[in-house]
Image (tube, helix red, strand yellow):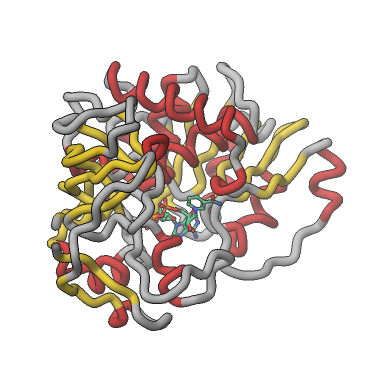
Length: 320
Ligand code: NAP
């Protein structure tokens, strides 16, 4: 089979398409024929060797894929060959024609969701769900600012928060991104590349501030975020690429909190809730992953460059 291999940490060019043996499922494992693999920003940090998790080399990147069960080990009960699934992590990596996964890493992909969309489920929607439900304890009638709403996590969070009954404010850096954020359910959209846009957000929040901020670029926005919070407001720090100075008084005045977040730290009970919540939303149409770009697997290098460029528009997925 064809797979992307990383033999040394480095720039996007270290992603190489190679011919490797197709793996066979061991006990508790399934083999998934991958129809699409999702590209997430953390795939690029891991490839660069700068991420908290540094896999042994060589490795195949990717946790998010959608496809069909090709084979199972005899003890597997949850799925059978032919089932459509999405993956939440794999054993051998998602940027490939086939991947081994543990039985518990595959989940049913509803018929109405395409494979391309299914590749954009786990990290984006898992993050959105965990941030809104577990970290922020967001409630219907509250106001949420999805700060960076045009990408994978943000567009998923907009759909989810809207369905939960929140007032949803979103930001994007391009007109195309803003149109997407509005289409996916934000009540109002702001341009985070425009000077002074925070004042417009405060105005939209009636001067009292927002209850929840899902922050995709904390090193740029955290200081200003704290000033946008209502009393008892919560900033959930999802994305961060550097350092920033904040004034803790901004939190004190509002009895507010800034909470660090990582999807990798979820408990098994939280993970079960996340999948149940996501699958229900995919089934009833409230969650609709947005595929902005499909590229052939051979263009993984390009995908890793483009995922970090401004102008997000949903997910980038690789098609083997
Ligand atoms: P993505 O699809 O590449 O989207 C990036 C988003 O950030 C886009 O909406 C982009 O908007 C926005 N952005 C760019 N400049 C911004 C600014 N100045 N202020 C606010 N937003 C800005 O990435 P993603 O998959 O949604 O992930 C978003 C971030 O969360 C990444 O840093 C990722 O590593 C992180 N993340 C963390 C976890 C965790 O467990 N902690 C889980 C998932 C993701 P424009 O392109 O329109 O400017």
